[in-house]
Structure formats: structure tokens, C-alpha cells
Length: 206
Image 1 (tube, rainbow, N blue to C red):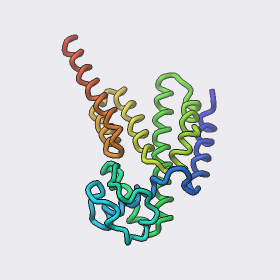
Image 2: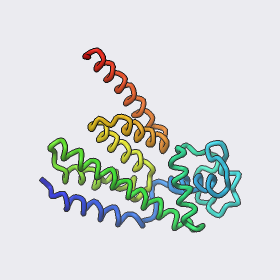
Image 3: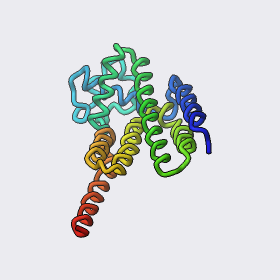
Image 4: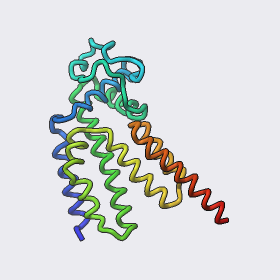
């Protein structure tokens, strides 16, 4: 199999090289930060308020959707709000911090995939490279800085926790993913239904 240290090292280099690169296809990071700034600095609810209300903010010209309320979950907004505070008013610093957090979250997802592959008797190095070195992942996460890195990390570790019988922890991880992006709620609902059916089968078997 592929040596794990080479797979992890190669994926890490690719992510770190792309981390300082300029945003290209997606401008979502600016939206994350502005919504976070609305909450952390302006004391506004980005789900209920429009960014247009804060048109005088120096970061406003970078926002692509000024008349769109936030579609991101409160967990992600609180995280980006914290980044805004740490950035000291520098948009460049805030963008780099968001991308750094996304790279860390990608690493968390990769570590979960490596562990899952090992438990299944599969090649951990190949699992690490298939995700960490995937061009789609590289464009979306270290380059684009998408919040989906948090969703991926929660999903992978929820799977691992479920395999260990820790269904409460798995449910909480899936709930956390839903509080980042709403589409993750589909996985949470499916999992809860599966748990109910699984426990029903245990009761009948008992």
C-alpha cells in the first residue's frame, strides 16, 4: 500500500501551498466574515438582518450578496465572528484565519478517514490521499475556504463514533454539522430514523 507518511505529507503540502492563495471561483469567505462581523461587531442577527444595513462598513464592498441574509448556521457564524475579533480589523488576516481553520478541519476529516480505513483493513495511505489530494477538495477547501470542511469532519467522526456504539456523540456531531450548514440536517434525520429502527429491531429480538 501507499506509505501513510507520504500520503499525509503530500496532502499537507498541497493544502499549505494553497492556503495563502487568493480566492478564485468562490467568494463565500467574504460572506462568512461579513455575517460574522454583523454578529460579533455590529450586534446584529445575520439571519434576520440584511448586510445592506451596514453598507458603511469597510468590508462591505467585498460582499457579493448584500441583499441576502445569512444561510449559514449559528455555529459557523460564531466561529467566523471570533475570527473577525482576532483579525483586529484586517480583512486579509481574517481571510487567512478562515482558510487556516478550514485546513485544520480538513486534517480532522482526513485523520478520521485514516482511522476508519485502518479499522476496515483498507489502505490508510490511499484513503488519506484520495480525500486530501482530491482536486475537488483542494479547490473547495484550502483554496476556496468553504465551511463544508466542518461538515465533512463532523460526518466522518460521527461515523466512527457510531461504529463504537457512541450514538449520542454521533448524534451531537451530526447536529453540529447541521449548525454549520442546513443541508447536513438530512444526514441527522436519516441517522435518527436509523437509530429508531435499529432499537426497534433490538427490542423485537429481545
